[in-house]
Amino acid sequence: MEENILDCVIVGSGPSGFTAAIYAARADLKPVLYTGLEPGGQLTTTTEVDNFPGYPDGITGPEMMMDLQKQAERFETKVHYELITKAEFAKEVGGVHKLWAGKTEILAKSVIISTGATAKYLGLDDEKKYMGGGVSACATCDGFFYKGKDVVVVGAGDTAAEEATYLSKLCNKVTVLVRKDYMRASKAMIHRVNNTKNIEVLFNHELIGIEGENSLVERAVTINNQTKEETKIDVHGIFIAIGHKPNTDIFKGQIDLDDNGYIITKSDTCLTNLPGVFAAGDVQDHIYRQAITAAGSGCMAAMDAEKYLGELE
Image (tube, rainbow, N blue to C red):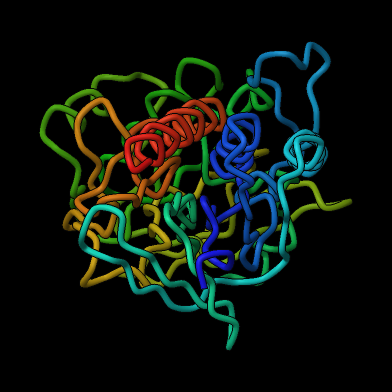
């Protein structure tokens, strides 16, 4: 039985998962990583990554994830292209955690959860069609590509307000589409939006379509849900800012989550409320949500896991 218990299992394969694997492998923890349904995570939907250090000419999201995977495998990380579907975590120090990939049971002394978060979209077919060609869910990731251009932000909460004010510094004009007749954002954020000259808020407006050529966005098709009048807005970028959903459903009831489903980690660490279970990346970070911060927390999680395993010996 003992020889079948792994030292370290990593669940998820974005920047946090692969960085955790690199550090865990170099610490001789012999990590085994399960990619999940989307190997490489959210970055695989990003065409250009220009803000990750070490790539002076930029790199595509998928290429960068392949680089990280190769580096993890160079130190003998075992990568399985499978989805973890169930988890039963031990509650005592030194306990054995159980995970399942389908019907396969996996036993581990430590688990690093790096399952990320999924950006919420409206569900329009056009969103998929123009993904990477003008449709984005991250202004800090992609805003630079729309310097001096007109863009649309869809959303009414703090995320939308933050994206709009960030984009206003780069873009010619930012149009915010708000479904209701008010914004849900905090008063401070609404005040900031209202005091930014090149932001226009259209209340009772919804995005119903996207038009363009050669997979590049050229127009946002909107409807006023009160008057039913349709309008086309000439834009190059459409930012969907209606929030993210952390991929934590299979851990509910075992790990402490906040009101939005993000894993709660102890201050300045990647420790969860369960011994030997750690969380890294967007699954526990709803503030920064960047590849570089995810990678940094992956490093932290691996070091926390190494320390935990070392204290068991």
